[in-house]
Image (cartoon, rainbow, N blue to C red):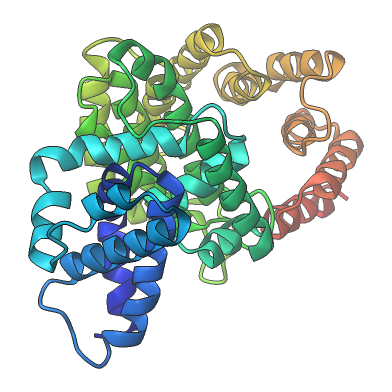
Length: 408
């Protein structure tokens, strides 16, 4: 087995292994460190001798590394003696990958990684590292930050969890519902960065987006009674369905009106609609409403035949349930399609007057498009050039400058 095989096994089994180790040791940071040491050992030894049970090998090796760390860390004989009982590959697999325990373990791992005591950046990094199985290098590459920055976030996160005495357990039902929003928020941030990168030379970061979808599917399986979990999964699936048509062969963005809808992933659309139907049984929350908007796009044969009135209505409901300037801006875009640019421009100007999105390229982008449709070309060009200066994504910036030049 080579490096790719080790990485594949780790990506599939990492959440189970770290979760089982955390339950076994009672120490989240120790569990993650021991698991990483096991992966390093696998990279060195598997090419020479492949184990019959790769997941069990990783579990047993990580467990031994954890016990070694405890022995180095403490003089309490009974502590590590208890952990050393039955230290064999088979017993490690039988005990620590118990299928009756693993679902709750993985779910607990998600709640620990997204604990409110952590900063938003640490939650994202820890979730991708310990639940998603991504390396520090992969996380750094996805978010375009230095590897030491990611490593520092992970280290600080684990220290914060230890200092706060966060237990490795599922929160009580009421607290779990309260904290579920934080878990969903982390997955949403990961997916959003993958679907429209905030900076860099690529519009899409599919690996990151698909990792968020994988984690959302896991959460939906573990929390099947929570409609917003299905709502987020539906939103991700329906949005990702358009990925094949969103960029050209050279990676340049293709606008919605120019996309070849035959390239849209019909399987993802079907999965998204099924998840949306599940979410709808108990009323749609913010993620479910966004998924319903995505479903309207997914079911339309063209931009012109899209039910823009329904989308406007959904944005109005979303604005009441989860008000934000981005929701208001998106509603303005929908209003422009349903009722014309003049009415939409008034909404955008209200946002500007209230200084709701300072420094964002999104407001001048939308305003420039609306002014162009109103044939106010010099103003439109100025707005699009401003948007280009504010935009950190090179692909988006190129599109904005091209549009501005066309208004010359």
